[in-house]
Each structure stands twice: as C-alpha cells, then as structure tokens.
Image (cartoon, rainbow, N blue to C red; front, top):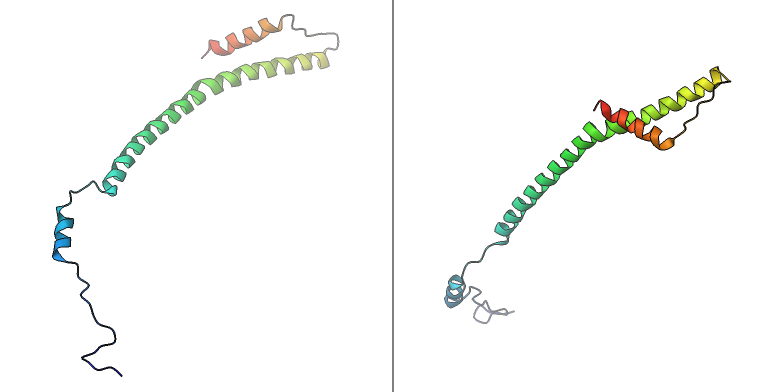
Length: 116
C-alpha cells in the first residue's frame, strides 16, 4: 500500500489565482438577458393589448351592424319567397313574378337599412 508521504493521488490547489479574479472583476458589466427579456415582454404585452382591442372592435362591428343587417336582408328575402310559395299553393291561379331582380335586391337592401 502507499504511505502518507507518498500519496497515490496528490491533492492540488483548485482555487483560482487572485490575478484571475481581478481580471474578471475589472470587466465591464453588460445588460443581463433577464433585463432584455423584461423589456421585450412589456412590448409584447402592449402589442397584445392593442391586438385584443382591435379584435373587440371588430367583434362589436360584426355583432352590432353587419349581422343584424344581413339577418334582416336575408330574412326579408326568405319571407318574400315563403309568401310567394304560400300564395301559389293557396291560390293556384296567382303567379308571383319579380320583374326586375336588381330593383328587388336594391329595395330589400334599402328597406333592411332603413331602420338601422
């Protein structure tokens, strides 16, 4: 076996030299990645808030203007079609004819928008 004076594995000094520590301490401080991430998160949250606000405005536009207008327009078309079919079924001698489809569509659009 080995004796205490001649160790098989010599222990070496693992602590860094003081000159190495002085060199590290003399380096200028740079912005940490945490600071940069915080700034980007704030920017993203502002953009996200604006995006959500834009979506909310679009949703309001659709629910308050477009959907009621389209529902009223197509509801009137459906009602007119159903009324025509009923009249032809109930009174076989009556014929419902739209003479000008453009005028019919325009009148339906104007009537649907009249009460908005």
